Image (cartoon, rainbow, N blue to C red; front, side, top):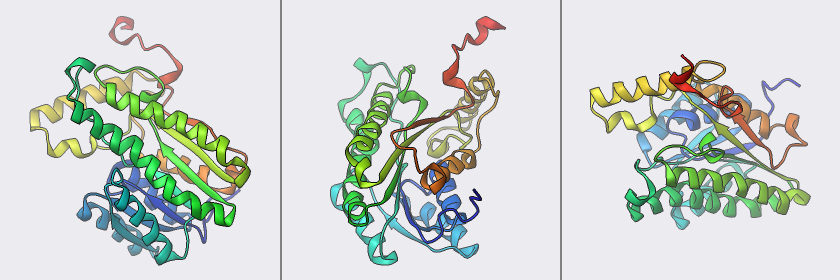
Length: 270
């Protein structure tokens, strides 16, 4: 099946689409023919994504939203429906990493923020989108989880907990809504070359360079030996929302260069 216009006539909401994976997904959805609602807490970044889409002849709007907030998540969905006449696709991509540290060192408010954005945000946007899917007996949801939801990772208790919960929420939603022809799948990215997302603005030059070096070294030890480009995740998201994936629901798809397929011996193997 050609995927060049696999989503023609569909309308997609992509949260956290001002940067990184979300930005790539928004552009790829548009290139596949969809109308796109770009959403982020950073308006300038979100408007940039909209401009990228409209400059290529696509249709897109920006809706600012902190998806952890009930009214803002509801407004995101309702504004999309009013603008485009409906919603067919929801990509729950918005997420935060939180602070590092072992669990006993984590501030409760910081833990709550990660759970609030990553898990509650997924819950809220899905909650408000599903009635529209039920009305048409059709819908496609892609939740962006993480390999950190499949394995343990050092000093990332909140993030691992939130992404693991998203993975099993994906399975549960597939059970509840399969008979309504609402397909729900999740993508677990591994190391993705996003310039460490928004951390670049918060780290000093030396810290940032060291963080990039650590990430590149870790990615080099995976079976494919590199980080992915955001478009490599976006292409999978487009596929999962297309008719080519019509018999897929409750699937947890890793886009990780093989990192969860093998025990990584690291420097011990050198």
